[in-house]
Image 1: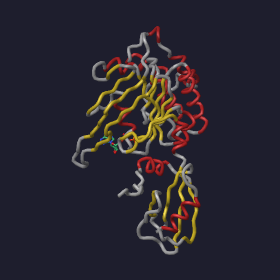
Image 2: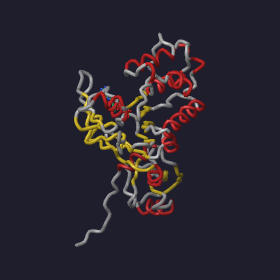
Image 3: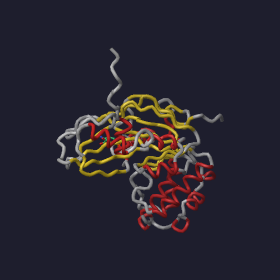
Image 4: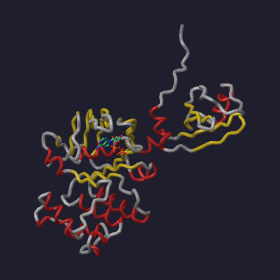
Length: 319
Ligand code: ADP
């Protein structure tokens, strides 16, 4: 079979959750276009509520999209839902353990659900790969949280899908287990499996992913090779304490400014474009007497803001 160039292609994807008695309708995805190349380790990064799980649930066939098209391994999820689903394994965010099964039984049942013939099952191999051989015949309720999570990865792989999606795989997992999990994920990728993972830890995406897409409020705000993105994200913040607390944030040159609750002024700048000197000069020029200042590294929230922030147009008006 000829392999597709892209593991996943989403075009114009919208999802609106209908209103309920308690909540208004919620537009969770607002026109997502994403191309995930075959063979990559692709990071889907975004703050809570960005729409990452919604996107993944649509891929997994658990949530219906409102509009748009999705192809998984070249197979349209509307036209060939079974084939599309057979091409993907999804490790959900929540640990959902079948407490009445042992890990071995759990994998056998899952393989049965996917119609994998007995002779082609890889139960022992998966148990070994995820360090669960010792616990193969223990009840799942006797497993630690990390073991349950690894079992979920094994379950997602029973039908040998070419695409594996992990939704926040390391939330609540200790350092050693994270390392083990990543080793396994990387080895799968080396065998040709395309990996998609969501996280809200920038460092995690940085160290693993070759490409990162940033999603915020249901839209893709950036999608590029990791090294390129990191260069763009190289922002810092100067926090100025004025002589008297400010009531509103003034314009400071071409920089983005924000007022802190205590009346301090935060000015965000890209290290490639300006330095603290320049920021400070512009703060003074804006008429803010500086009592004290400090610099801060960005957190992810700052990064999203700066990626979605359009600097005010300060180009001179030509008469
Ligand atoms: P993320 O995974 O990035 O944290 P989600 O996809 O879970 O984001 O959520 C995106 C938005 O959609 C959020 O505002 C969330 O409250 C809303 N949402 C998610 N699932 C549902 C649902 N089943 N019903 C209504 N709103 C939902």
